[in-house]
Structures are given as C-alpha cells and as structure tokens.
Length: 58
Image 1 (cartoon, rainbow, N blue to C red):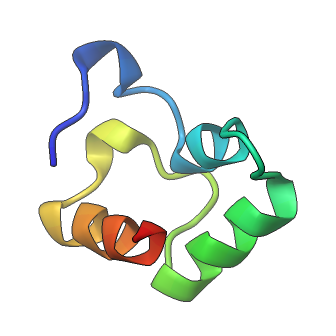
Image 2 (cartoon, one colour; image 1 turned 60 degrees about the vertical axis):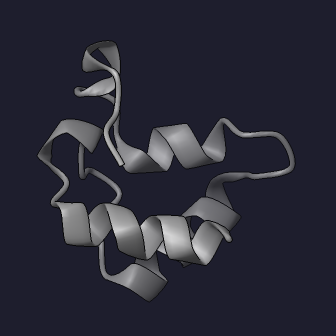
Image 3 (cartoon, rainbow, N blue to C red; image 1 turned 30 degrees about the vertical axis):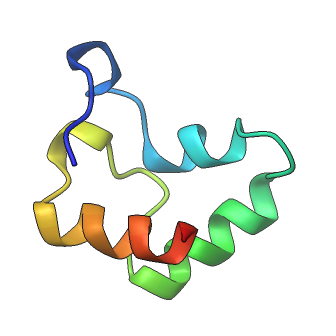
C-alpha cells in the first residue's frame, strides 16, 4: 500500500476527513481505534500502520 509522492506530507487525518461522507469525528474515531495521532503524515506511516487503516476501511 504505497502513496503518491505528493501525498507524503498530508496527514492521515486530513485525507480521511476530506473523503465523501467522512468528517472530523469519524476520521478521529478511526485513528483512535488504530492508535495513530491526527498529526501522522502519510509518508511516515509504516506498512503495518497502512494495513491497519486499510483493514478498518474495508
């Protein structure tokens, strides 16, 4: 699960909250479930962290 180079500085929270039918609360709840801070950038996520988020998204 790789992300495009341009997205490396974007936070996971920003990406999730910007999605259709997602908002700040839902994004915050998901990050809390997987133990990631809102300030975590996509480029610094480990493969394990990416899989955890992907699994929660279905």
